[in-house]
Image: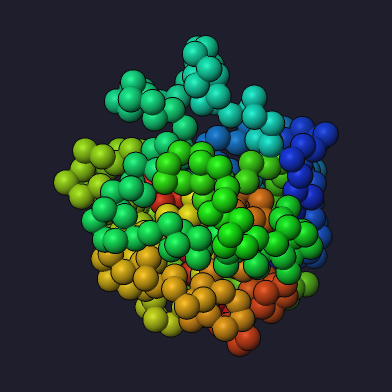
Length: 389
C-alpha cells in the first residue's frame, strides 16, 4: 500500500504557448531539470522514469540527455489524458517497492498547431497517419463524430436530457477556471477575463459545446520528482505526500464513445474512485481542493459525481453559487486554470498545481488546504491521486 510512503518533492515546467520552437524532447529535458533543481536532486541520481505511452520522447534518449544514472525502473501508462495521475502513481510504486530511489514522471506535448492533431486529416477527408485513430473509431466516425469534442458532445447532450443540466452549468465551470487563470501569470488565459455573456456568444464547436467548453491546444512540458517519504524530509521543498493512487475503467467501456454501455454516463471515474478511496484514510468530504480533468466542461460535473462529491445527476447543480470558485467556493477546482484556461498538456499541469496547493504556493491558494484530489481523463481509462500536506 502506498499510503504516505512516497512524496512529490520537485516540480518543473516550461513556458506554455501556442507554438514553441523546442522539440518535445528538449521541452521534456527542460521541465525535468527544473523539477530536479526544485527538489535539490542531481540528475545523476535519477534511476526511475515513467512516461505517457503517447510521449514521443524515448527513455534512452531522455536519460542520456539528462545525465541520469543507471535506470532500474521504467514504464508507460496509456490513454493520453487518462495517464497523468497514472505515471505519478507508477513512479510512486517503483519507489515504494524499492525498484528505484528517484523517479521522474513527465509529459511533453506540442499540439498548438492544428495540423498536429490526428483527427484533422481525417476530418478533411484525408487518410490519417497509421495508428493515429483507433479502430474503435469505426463505430462513430461514419456518423461524423471525428474529434474528441464530437464524442463528448454526445455524452453532454445525454447528461442534459437525463438530469436537466444546462449550458449555464457548463458556463459555471468555464467561468470558474478562467477566473483562476486570471490570477496565474503562467496561464495562457492570464490576461483574458471571460464573462457569461461572452460564453453564450461564442461559436459552436460541437453542439451543445461552444468554444469555451473546450480545452486549449498548447505546447509545453511538465515534470515531477518522486522519492521516499524518508528522503522527502531532507529535500529542498515541502513534500506533497502521495496518500493514495487509483486507476480504473468500468465493464463494457469504450474509449471516448461509451454509447453502447448500459449506462453511458457511468464513466471510468466511478471504477477509479472505488480503487482510490479504499486505500485512503479520508473521503470526498475531507478534500479541501480538487484538480479535476477538464478537457471539456461537462467532464467536471461528471467527475464530481464519480468521485463522490455529490449523487448521480447532481454534479451540474453542484457548480451553482460559485461552489467551484476560489477563494469562497465549497470546493475550489482547477486553481491554476486547468486545461480550459492555463494550458492543455494532457492534464499534467493539474498534478503540478496539486503539489503547489500542498506547498502553499498556488496563485489561488486555498487557505489551510491539507488535502487535494487530482484526477485524469474522464471518458478514457483513467487514474487519480490523493495528495496531502
